[in-house]
Image (cartoon, rainbow over all chains, first blue to last red; front, side, top):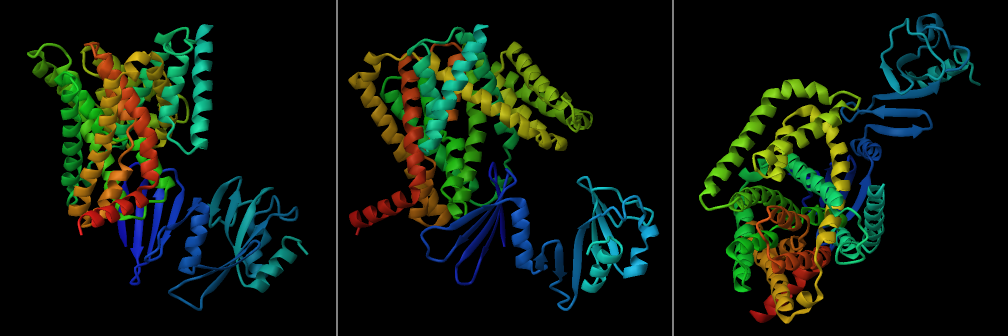
Length: 160
Length: 389
């Protein structure tokens, strides 16, 4: 990997494969990311411009960190521990839980699901303490087995 | 309320011609100058207060130099071949411009200005064409970007030398040079000393940060003017000093917007003051000089590019591409000329018309060269191989 600074443009990361194909990632000063692919012997490179969000997704696919995304579900695996899969689920709070604390709801005890984060008005609360009270509009991020997550949605949140 | 009318004329005409140039995938700089020529003194003469528009344009030059100073870093200078690359570009093109200047009967000082204008490529056009034409993956992109950085270093030096020489009598040159250098050191030291105090001010959410920047820019420019030191040099080093203040980075985007606006007005104001005389422009001598200048400028960049390519990349073709990419001239050539005109020591009509026509033509031709750099490089190689079997 070769890293070079291009003043007024950004930073270039470049890899050349043994076949002579080149891939370059350029972080532009504008915050966008350009992805160059130049096949050995090709006249012109193929280039695409990504937002940082898109680049992150491409990056996750390449590192194998993300296997599936099904609506609000994300399954994460790790390249080092190949048989470890973690299901992460994002769900909005419902009227049944608003105003109650995580402790009162006893989600963990009843369903085995753990709340790992809350997204509240664009701010995120990572590992919320048990006394955190859920508010209207919160998005909660939970981990657990598929079964447990389904049970949580049904019994605690009242989603059919 | 005539100033509103002036502002409307400037912004609307620049917007229209600017949009047209983007639509045609051309550099916008000549479009703004042409807008100025069309609506200014030599054209329809629609501007009420030329002085007012010129003031705004001067802010543009100050902000441009502030921007260049801020972006400027010579970290890369230690990499192998870098100094050689930069110096080759400078000597080949500067000497070519200087000799031609003397040949067409300019004074040595004017030849110096012409040579500077010939040497300095347009970073704006070169860099945006590297991105647009998807050249960033090629090794020569780094060389070209480095050349732009090196040209900024030389630009600062040229400006210091030029304003010192133009400050008056021969005896005054060392005095004025010393004054400029002292003031630069003063700014660098002062900003470093004050950085702990300034830094938190840049982190505020209100109008204080932007006010602070303009207070620094205008404050130091005013002092510089008082001391008869060039305000554009001061702006350059102020920008470079502020790049050391970490929290300033967040605010830099805002100053770029101001720079873009005022710099456009500067190109317009430069065009509007231009005395367009058909007899001068169509005279055989002028056309001959301009043609020679353009041919020499294009050749110069190809020659310096070829030398750089051969020594640094080990490939003549890569070098010819470097030459093609660095052909566009633009903002800096105009800024240099504007600084020289601003010193009021009498720049000849010939030089002024020559550089204006030169920049308009070479920014357009240069964009074309930069766009088709690949093909031009390859064709030239094929041609050279045929000639030298």
